[in-house]
Length: 419
Ligand SMILES: Nc1ncnc2c1ncn2[C@@H]1O[C@H](COP(=O)(O)OP(=O)(O)OP(=O)(O)O)[C@@H](O)[C@H]1O
Image 1 (cartoon, rainbow, N blue to C red):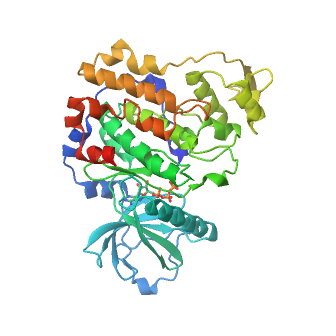
Image 2 (spheres, rainbow, N blue to C red):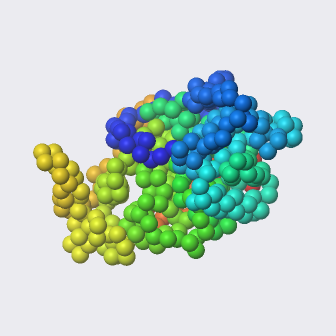
């Protein structure tokens, strides 16, 4: 899904909270997962004889799905799972391997997408070699094949992505802090694997994080934008906009810290149901960031290739791009930003907000969460919390010190703590 899809989102500050559901409760709620998927993505059944069709692709090079078609002589396609820039993803039953469900990513039919698909496969292979038992919460690739000029990549099938989970269980209010903690811990484990392999994901957001049916295990997916740390070509449009780190927009050299920033934005969204920085352009994104975190340092701005597009660097003045209400022309307003105007602690920890929280322990957990969020959202990437530090943060190691949390934490979380 594209960042542009959420452009109409309401400003992130307008939410009082919490009416939430813990991970365990989420897991207990019974609903028909396939009915949900069917409702979300209706499949057109093509009743033509497949052998009579000579154009298998739509005008954009996506494979036209035929319900009931068998791919690679073994995968019975029976549903659509999603569509992205690179591919459409289908659900199929693997008749060779015990009729298990698999997700098949059918890459669009063109050279650029093919090359991107091959790169994604190479990165997934590297990650799997370093995590042979699959404990680090990155999607498992099973194999690849080609079908009518489309590269097809077979994955373990998971259920909803976190955007769908939010829509279903936490629309506008977000998820319970204990569920967020379990998800955060697993996300940091996935970042630790990426770090170990020198890979930057570069597109972390709720859409690219899938959960199992019980919703107590998540996996990071869509490595289609991932690259080796050595490749870091400077471009201001890497990562979906709402999750894009400031160093990308400013044109600084970047590193795995950009994924930490995206995880911070994602965790905030999971907890509040709101997008943290809903900027409609890179310029607005910078304004949103400074509203929360204060001005950028001169040193940082001086190093950025694109800083001059957004700042008068010497004067430390922000050049705010706006549309004039009367003329509809773009105008640039000089704005001096001296301190933040938004306060995460006020927003998430004020007495009114915490009044609805069940017990003291949960209140403490929320305090720890806000501390961690603050550290993931440090403007200077060199000072941002690292994965190693995040995995040791009190919010993440909470279950070891709190008996109540450990009873509520799902079995999956218990496994990952020890991995
Ligand atoms: N293994 C899987 N199990 C279940 N659903 C999946 C799986 N892989 C992908 N999906 C669904 O398909 C959607 C698109 O997948 P993915 O993001 O990998 O494709 P893409 O073409 O690379 O998209 P993007 O535009 O985000 O780059 C996901 O958001 C998810 O809902």
